[in-house]
Length: 120
Image (tube, rainbow, N blue to C red):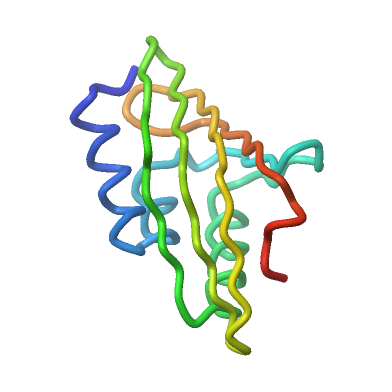
C-alpha cells in the first residue's frame, strides 16, 4: 500500500518530466500498463522502452496531476497532459489513471482518455 508521501513523490517525478525514470523507480519488474481497451503491455523494461519511444517523438511534454486518491492498494490520478510533437502539433487531453500498488510500487495501471486527442 503506497503512502500519500510515496504517491506524491511519484507524481512529482512525472510532473518534472521524467516519465521513463518514474517507471524505472516506481513500478514492479512485472508491472503492466493498459491504454483504454487495448491489450496491456507487460514488464517494466517493455514499459520504459515504450515510454522512451513516445518521448522521442515529442519536443515538449507537460504533465499535471489535477487530483489523486489513495484507497489501500488502489490509486486514482486525474492528469492533464499537453504533448507537442517535433512538427509542432499539440495534443491536450485529460486522463484518469487507475493503479494497483504492491507495497510501494505500481503493479498494474490502466489509462482512460479520449484517444482522438493524442498526438501521434
